[in-house]
Image (cartoon, rainbow, N blue to C red; front, top):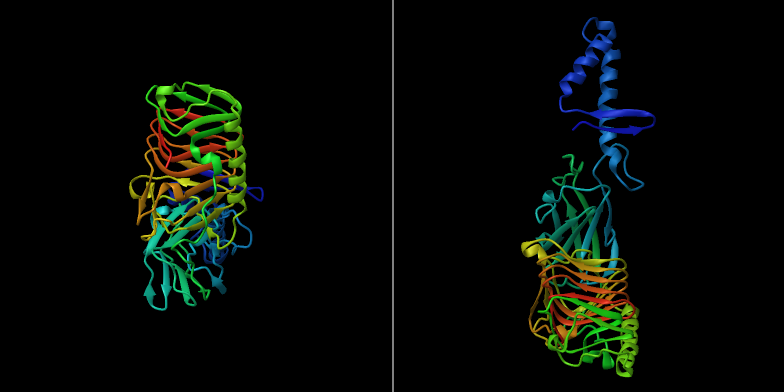
Length: 389
């Protein structure tokens, strides 16, 4: 490894050949030359090993762990003994250090109701492991979460023992057939692109279905009437100003939603989410490849089902990621309320109405089945397809 770390004024070194260290230790302390020094030298060996372990476990980033023991489960959500947990709850466990993601899966992160294993999806990012049940949990029931000692950190260190905790769901399940009312867009609903600070497009093949406008900064760069199947407003028209006012009302409505909120993970790829209000105080998005780059929204047969995704900061998707709608889900009933800005990766596919406080950027080839609406910042396009539902 050849790395060094300073702690309490000393340097602990990790080398590729421990035999060299023990040989040097033997020479320094005359190990094996006489029986009187055996105990003394054994103590030095023990101290060296202890120091090495302490160095390896000094990489945690949380307070309150057991000294010299790594890794550990630092916290869970729900916490041990929690009651009245929502039946749509996503279960998380936070570690005290970055873990080896290949060791965190459905065989090492388990959820049980009695002796029955609950089906679901496990994802890991940085310190956080997320278990998303395949269906709603049963109301008024006790569940047990288990992190097995097979999980390891990046140095190969495992949990000392299995970590278990329990919680109980509430009496009333979340209704999945239409859990939240939609967000009223008003006249902003006429627009596929609505901006507070102009629209910029690169690429002659951009195609927008729906009106396009900006207010109060009405600058439109790179868009021609042939790019827009709708009205292209090139000045600060009062119609666009009214739409901006309606957008602000809709944005504030979405940001104020809190009833029956479900925790929204930072990584949405690989998940299947039922209708509801999902909240993340910071950022969220879709990353990964294959199935880990796909978010599925399942309406369960209800074409009027509504999703509201509220995040305090950014929304971002990686190149090639996508959203899949099933069970009658419709893009017009999906709302993304973004506290700052949204960015969509190259050739990604996204569904829903994006209400961003700041800017929205669609990179090359990104397709949006929905609306790109910003209160303050600009909308930036590059050879995109945007279709207003």
